[in-house]
Image 1: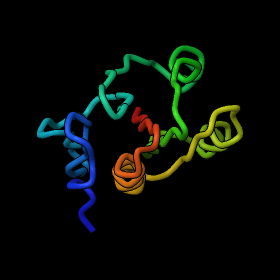
Image 2: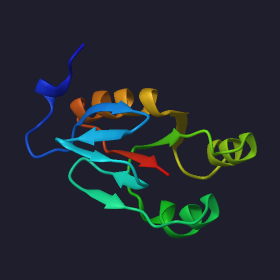
Image 3: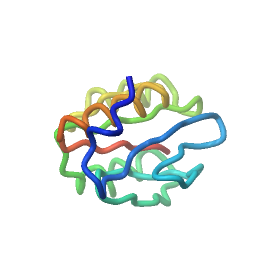
Length: 114
């Protein structure tokens, strides 16, 4: 089901995703980022610990979708799930689809990809 017509204009919508990157409002992103409904913040983090210390405490959202890539260990994934933040850890495809649905519902959602 295409949910993009339900999303307010001016919001950043994920149009597609692949191994080559994620297309957001017509532009392809391959690097790490935090995607908010109204802005995209490129990330320059060397590790998951950097993200946890510097970025996560600043995010205000109902839910943080963490797009898991193959370079995260199962210990890293478990640590994210057990953190004090409302994080849902999922594969990139599921995270992208869930982001758009929550955005259409008007929820404060952030997608993190590292």
